[in-house]
Image (tube, rainbow, N blue to C red; front, top):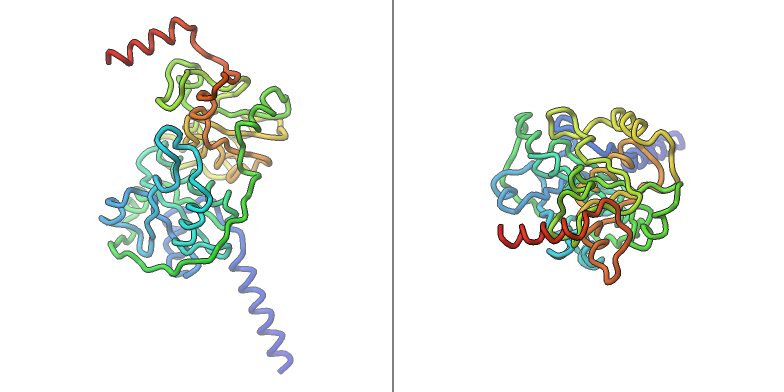
Length: 312
């Protein structure tokens, strides 16, 4: 009887350890498929509701990307904590759930949506997180099952325990802007970084002072919408950042492309102390007093650009 008790105890301990084992931040369709029968795995489909209703991964629940974002003038802003908590609870997520985020997979920019939701869940204190690499496009390409059933999920009682280590604020940027041991990473395409164009949410072109440009597109396999492996991400990070710094902060226009840089640097390459500024330039360029910028066009060029926008 004693042996049976010990054996049972060891079995339960092993099961518990397996349940809480770390998970890969990216999964291929082939890696995700066998996990679907596990009740602790929750597939979160962040595509528009119409796409979800048409076809989705069996057992997936719908949580459109827009429900994780802020208002139109500042979409990078996090929704109120109470709303995010309700969202997580409605999806039945808690610290034991392995949440797998699925986007369309149609473009490299689309990956930023999955990375942003992943980042938000991590900010809310969840750790067992993955992204389906290539999204629904890769799932369909692999010829794997889809259906139209909408599963009933038991709501959880999870209360967020905020992980502030992944979040950077405007005040944090100001504190680190001239720190040689900090790195501000602009994830936007080069034209944005150089001030040749700007997003509608930004009041001026250019970038945050002393930032470096690591466009989100560098993290993808050639001619593919799939992000690189962890090994390849480490190689890219080593080339771009030969020396580690104390603090790395990714930003873009609205915390979308920046989520890809954060994901690649933090979750794949494993760099320490990587944060994201979710509001990004939609926040930075719309303050009462102008904040430090680089690559800003001259006054005349800015007026000419405004005139072009008026007559186009």
